[in-house]
Length: 111
Image 1: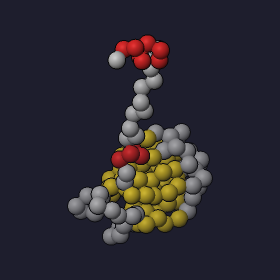
Image 2: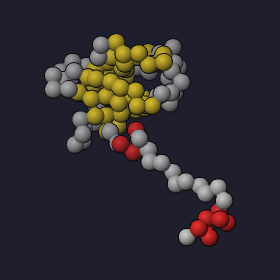
Image 3: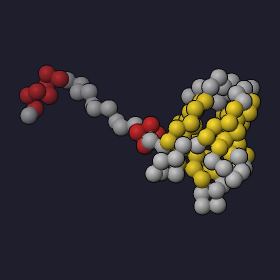
């Protein structure tokens, strides 16, 4: 199965059809971008340009295949749930974890 996410014209809402049928309201913060997370692990980043046209990017690949058809995003995989949230750079680009020393006993003598 699949899910299609289509912006509703002249509004900041998204119509979802396919495995999940609903209408989502896009939350706004200082940043005009928003995130859509799907149960297959896909994370989509969307934003509205000056002409109120919705644009999409894949922030993280999941199990499904993502296709963009005009203003709509289509995820070809079984989807059980999805959610929309304001943009957070820490979600899209998480910080690197600290390096693990290979030889901890040598590192304490290196300083």
